[in-house]
Image (cartoon, rainbow, N blue to C red):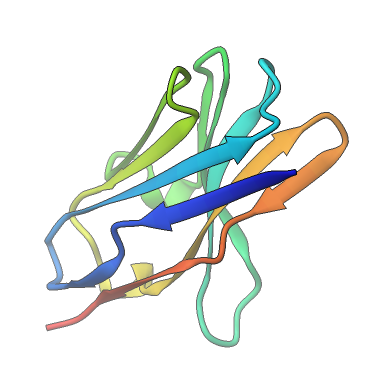
Length: 115
């Protein structure tokens, strides 16, 4: 079994920064992809950024140049550094781990960007 525990959400003013962390535990395969998705009220869940165990990254167009995803394979932890935050970034952010045919999800952490 796999567990994902997120931390780092909160309330921030427009233009501010937050750093999300997600630690995976359990049976973690050497080859996997970890990522962050978000879901705003009334909207579908969408990919924000993802990173493979080899370090390849993928970003949503809306966050390119503002968000940076990274990971520490030794700690099975993925990070999302979010800069220049906008009100439209407000959402619940979910950590995701893809390995083999399976997807695992964290419980979600709220990010609110408001003055």
